[in-house]
Image (cartoon, rainbow, N blue to C red; front, side, top):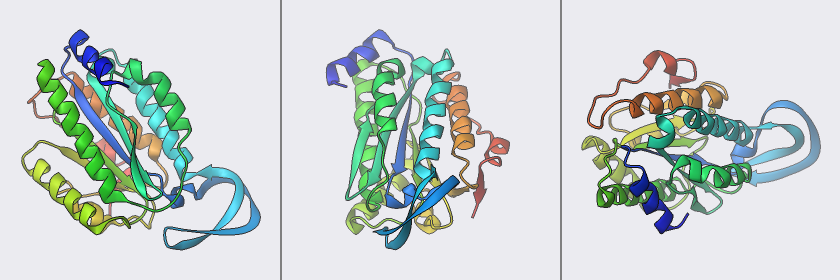
Length: 260
């Protein structure tokens, strides 16, 4: 998506925006089987500090997450207001680096790219979480500046941080990311949703990113319920006015998340 098209989106549609960045763990451990029928290959691989048995078949944690992401997009596209106000950016972290998979843009313009790139996500490598959060914050800041330049109002940005492990990238990048999220959250310039996946998720680290809201652990692999809740929350926000206090559906959270 080039800069000219991004600016044209703002000029042609002055609706107040709801920017959401999904910062998602795609490290090797997200390739673990969480359901379905499997067959052993007799092979083993080393990822995220552990040896993993390699099997064929079944459903992986990453596949479950991808299904949830698609539900999230589809729900927003079906909402007449959210379709034109919500903007989504996806940053992934796996291997040795973080990657902006999809940058902010109008949802309709994103559609083809979204379907292709989300389907191509693979679980691989380590967990450079600090690098990913810094990249996500950079994307949010850049889009906010574009809103301001175009005279488009916007709601407080949302950052969803989802991981099934512990960070093992640069310690300096991790500390910088934690400092940045804390400063933004305390100034009410960022709403962060830290979410642990599975029992190996480092909930203590996730808590450091969020001074106002404790991290939640996903119940089982309830990605679909989480993304249903998230899309409903975005839809409700898009129907309010920037600056309004938005009440989250706390009862709905109980269907997919729990305090550690």
